Image (cartoon, rainbow, N blue to C red; front, side, top):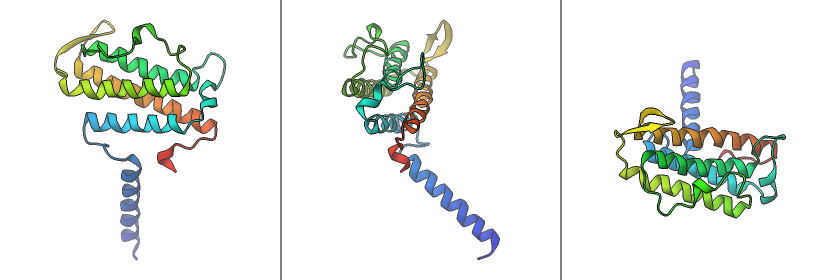
Length: 172
């Protein structure tokens, strides 16, 4: 095989591996992307032993459970900024990331917050103006912030997991 053909084969193999590891939803729009990230966060939370939910990398730094609760409470808070109806949401405004520590309860909060985002997005008026931390924005930009925020803390959770010898399930 000549060098050019070998390079093309290696590039194609790398792209195929990337596509397979990135999973369904990558590059397919907001809801598929959000579903992809929420699925990975839940997989990582499920792979983390309950006794590790209290682990933190150092004093004053969020624990595993606090990171996951930060994601969940953040999802509800950000949804409230879009004007989404949160009638069935837990009392997120009265709950902090330090209030829920039990693995099953934390995972429940994550699942419920992810479902709230998925249910509200199709009904959202994305181009509608919104205030976000006192600044002019749009509902669409706030939904983008939800996705970015989830990815930011998924990266943090991956680092925590790896520091504890836990391999993210999708990278095995």
